[in-house]
Every structure is written in C-alpha cells, then in structure tokens.
Amino acid sequence: MCLGEERLGAMAERNVQAILDAVEDLLERRAQASFSAVAAQAGVSRVTGYAHFPTSEALLEAVVRRAVNRTAVALEAAQPDTGPPLEALERLLSAGWRELDRNGAIAAAAATQLSPAALTRTHHAAHERVRELVDRGRADGSFRADMPAGWLVACCFALIHACADEVRGGRIDPAAALAVLTATIRGMLTAPGPG
Image 1 (cartoon, one colour):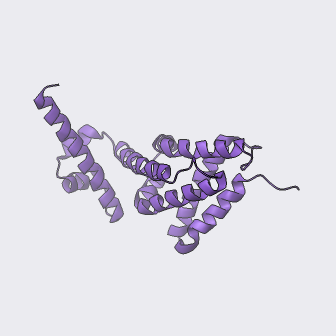
Image 2 (cartoon, helix red, strand yellow):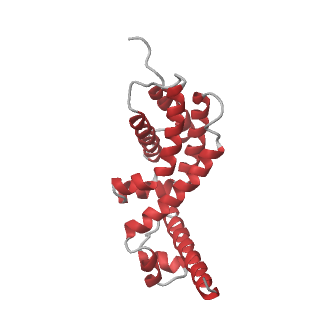
C-alpha cells in the first residue's frame, strides 16, 4: 500500500468515526439525526456520509454495533469466567446496565428504527458473552437446563431492554432498576424449585 492510499484510508476511518460520533451526539440531544444533520455535525459532506452508509438503517446499525462492542469490552472486564456463575451474572448485569444507561438514546433509537435482523447482527458479541456464562452455569448446575440455552440468553436481553423501557416510561425507579432486573434474570435462570 502506498503512502497516498494509507492517508486516504486514515481519512476515511476518521470520517467514519466522526459520522458515528455525530449520530451518537444528535441522538443523545434528542435532535433529528438526518443525513444532513449528521454530515453537518461530523464536518463532512452528505456524499461522504452516503459513501460510507448508504441508508439511515445502515448508519444506525453501525452506531449500535459500536456501542455493543463497547459493552462487550465492559462485559469482559466484569470477568464473567471467574467465580460462581450467579456472582458472575450479577457482575455482568451491573456492567451491562451501566453501558445501557450510557447508551440509552442509541438503544431507544435502535428499538424503534432497526429491524429484528439488524438488532440480532449488532448484538452478536454481547449475546456470545452471555451465552458462555449461561453454558457455564448450566454445566455446574447453577442455572436451569430444562430450557434451551439460546432461549435463556434471548430472554436475558429482552428483559434488559424491557427494564430500560420501563425506566424511560417512569414505571420503574432508576435507582431500583438494576436490583429489579438482577432479581428477575436470576429467578429466570435458576432452576425451578419443587412444584
């Protein structure tokens, strides 16, 4: 690769990051994240924006993927592979909840504007991390094994997003949300007692 190509690649990467930063900022401020507004905020032309992201869904999907990748890093830092699975679950949920709070505007936009297929693609890294913990908990008997592991993981993410919706709607106190979420997911994942 020649020096000119390296500079063009670096410039393209800077433009992509500026565009993604602009979308995040606009969403956080509850402003319209149109291509015009995003381009103006990012300091690029609309043509440049469209060259990187041909549709508004592709743009939002990229923003969500970046936020989920940050969340995956936070989940990894919570050390879900150490200690008893129930304790690891609590650490994982705490880290994930902080990231969801940090990315609340992105999550709200994704919930209303992205297709289910796009949501699945963007959340893959986080789903894999939770799946590993669920598998570990099932292997040592901490988590229930009477339901498919994939279903339990899907339910975890559905509950996390439902809790965030309840907080946004004023139906759950933000200060109590993590405790409510943790108790609900813990109850779902642990084996049912004798009937």
